[in-house]
Image (cartoon, one colour):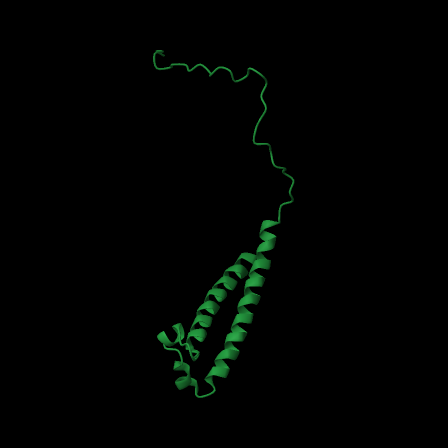
Amino acid sequence: MLNFLIGVGSVFLVALCAWLILLILMQKPSANAGMGAALGGGVAESAFGGEASNVLVRWTVYGIVAFFLTALLLTLCQIPKYHKEPREKELKPMVVETPAGALTQLPAVQDNANETP
């Protein structure tokens, strides 16, 4: 069930990101213009009327709050997945000590090709 909620939340987060990008690009550009003017900034004024900038700013703020809350909830949903097992296993040493002289010779390779059954 948790995996399903994480999947739905992730899809919602991606859709919310696309919606926020569109909201930001629809806003009226500042005096410096910039990228908003190049991509059709201010087009929302003709669609929503003269008060479009207030509405778009309000929606952008709500969208950003929803983005951060969704990201926080998705992060909190990931915690139980990685902390299920208690840490019973300690890290094993990388170097294994062997008795002196145990690895001084390579094992003999037996040639089974010359033997006839």
